Amino acid sequence: MAYRKTKDKKKTLKELSELDDDCTDIWKENWFDKYEKRSENLEDISLAQFIFKYYKNNKGVYVKRDEPRVIRYRNYDMATDFNEYIKEKW
Image: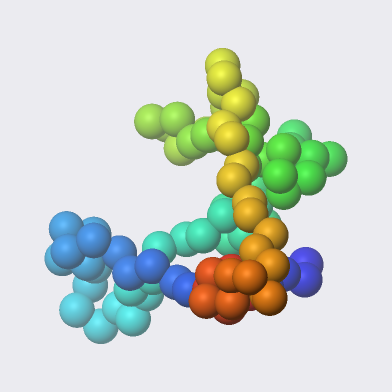
């Protein structure tokens, strides 16, 4: 799967304290990671559908949302909003 890598987020202090001392996995899973690990019954849906239509319940199973999420995206113009344009691209 090809995608633009975004900035990773560190796990919370609570999550980090629960890790083994020699564990180096300090980053939270992003939507791309979750999408790649989705179950076989969700194989035919797109990344966008996965994000706005599904969530992981308390049992760790992805289920369909009652109300879909809103995916927000803004395409800044380089000429008028250069700083925001750079943030969006990187």
